[in-house]
Image (cartoon, rainbow, N blue to C red):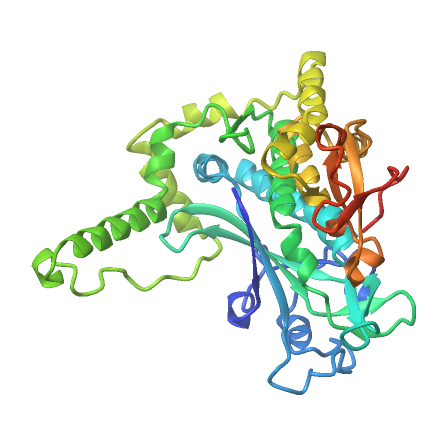
Length: 418
């Protein structure tokens, strides 16, 4: 399960949708009279895509009438394949519950990371006049259910538009995109954790962590045969890699049959139909009993985290500064947030996660650093520019007065909202 961020390029990927699969506005500030949670219409979406206000057509960008206008960014949030497999074998009622859990986790991820830490613009000319200002932004979230290989895959494409309504002068300006990329790993970790909690609390699904550092979450009792069946993309990519290697080892590519491209054109991922649902269940029936597997996974029984589980999460969060310092002498706030979200593993609700983040940033071994020559992002205290080391590192290197242009400072009592 990952989060990827790309610049928007093709408006046709998001238009032409009808309920119940239309996109949803994510607009807590109520910008441009677009209601938060309302369905996205093609007319309003395309107006924003081109840099104009949906209602009156007023340009929101100086480049709105030019070909150089950039519509914004697409954040793709992808659940683990076990979650998509559960959705594929579930009856209609539970499929809708899983879809809502995925969309709600995406909404919370936008709120806690993107809207909170990345809603800024840059004004002034390059150099000393360049400054960063906060504002309000909006996004649209679009659900997908079927991958390009026609497998079940519950993706959410979150379109973050290239407009910021500044707090200082209430003007519209372009979004400063760099913070989004700085928060990429934390965005993925937050989505994984918040989705895992919603599946636990709403459907009673037992989740487990996996990966080298336990950074991913998956459904514990999913049949591995279904994962393999519906992971055609991975198999296809591996086959392509094998073919390339074979061609490289063979002087004449035609001799190995790889002279011509064997990669079929990519389809466009899409929302599911009733025919898709029937096909998925029929494919699953060749491996398992879908109803029996669903009954084993979806128990509709929720229990709070035990004291033992809480203690384990606390120990792991206490150890975050040390584990980060093993790989990096200096690390950032997004790295800490990502580790906190991974440590929780779907055990806690959104309010509790805010508390765990504050707890991690108050660690006694964590030492904030300050820049010798800060850039505009660091001057205003944006969170992705908040860097740390550990007291252990400085104690072990007492003669290091500077760390890559950074110096130690007194810990701040309250972290910046950015």
